[in-house]
Length: 116
View (cartoon, rainbow, N blue to C red):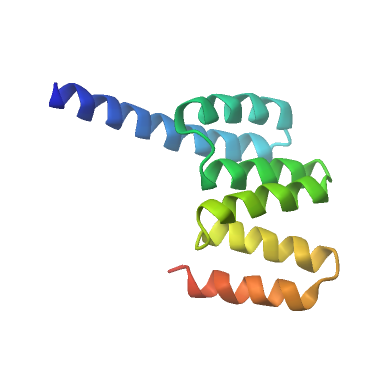
């Protein structure tokens, strides 16, 4: 039984990693509809984790839906307030809308929560 559980975990983890990379590729290619489809499948397995909200926010940002992107990034930060991707993205959004002080605070948090 234990080996089956480990095997399932490895398959699921591998699928989620490949899905995230594929979704990111689709977004960079501008194929947002396909990215949304794969994100839906990702959500079915992982649930709505911080990575889900990060990717969903990026899609909203690419659709010029700033308000929805803010909402997604904020929900992700409520799950993991040290997620450097989410911190960076919400800092960027604040900069775009002219909230420079807020952006600076998020950029500082991002720097403090990343190794790269």
